[in-house]
Amino acid sequence: MSWINQTTGNINHHQETDFGTQPIRVLHWMNLFMFTRTHDSFFDELKEEIKTGKLNGEIDIVYSEEPIRKANGQFNTPRANGVTRKIELHETFLSYLWCCTYSVFIRYVETIDFPNCNRLSGYEKYPISEENIAKANEVFDYARNLIVDFVEWDKTELPNPEIYEAEKRDYVEQTNCYYTEAVKFILIHEFTHLKLHVDEINKETPDSQYLKYEIEADNNAINKIKSGLPTAPSPLADAHRLASENGIILGLLSMFFFKATTEGIRHPNSEDRLTNALESLDLINNDFAWGIACIGLKMWDEQFGLTFDWIENPASYQVLYYNIIEQIKNR
Image (tube, rainbow, N blue to C red; front, side):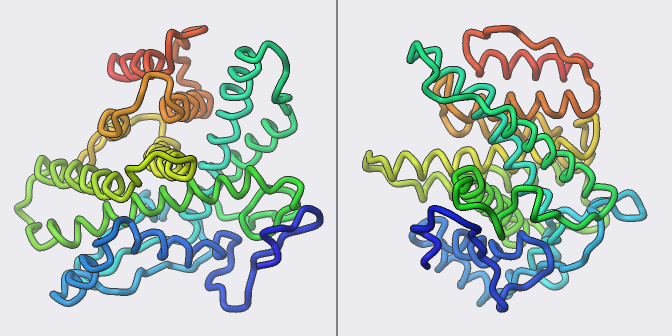
């Protein structure tokens, strides 16, 4: 644990016991730890579902150096396997999720949060780093490429959770917090399918029922995460809330970058899932999460050339968010 107080040189988290080949491997155990401790009684709930046979106690992480998009056009995204009763995660998708999380978070901090703080302070309290913004864009380019083509993560050039400079640890380690919360949201979503839905599905199940199941799985995940948040005010409680809420939003934002449209057949439209989460979290107008959502949609706009009309100096990022959602709906 000497890395905790390390201030110079490279921090290297890789151990021989790590599973997988991609740098994201160093967080697989943390994902499991955070998932099982969602709230005080959640671990007991998991044990009960394992006992009844609805849940396999092993999370199936597929270790393969291949892109997220399969030859048939489908994607290796998280799923609940009704036969094995396992939650399936592909390591490349987890790498993609971390990179999306890093890119959106750093762009929010460097282009929204720091400028706002400087404006309120009346001086440049937090210098804006064009280098950090450029690096965030590079990481996002790598994430997008993983959808269609697997390329090895360059740990010497791109930020990653396995090995990084101690002097630049803040952005990586904050990303780790948001990423593990995003994975927690995804795991609870898939757990809900195994517990409540897969046994109800057959060849006659209409698409409308699948949509209901997806909404229920999102809401169940959000509610379980909220129930695990501390109630007594403290700096640690605030940090916990911030990580959990933004992890949910970042997890949902990652689904936008697969294509230029948001329509689903058996899944709700991506913007509807995102809006539902934001509204379910009872956020204040200018809360961090509204800004994160706007940055994610801005990056999606830039990725596919959607040319949304972005309000300059909006009254709040909540106002800006709903304006963009309206434009999505009108197309």
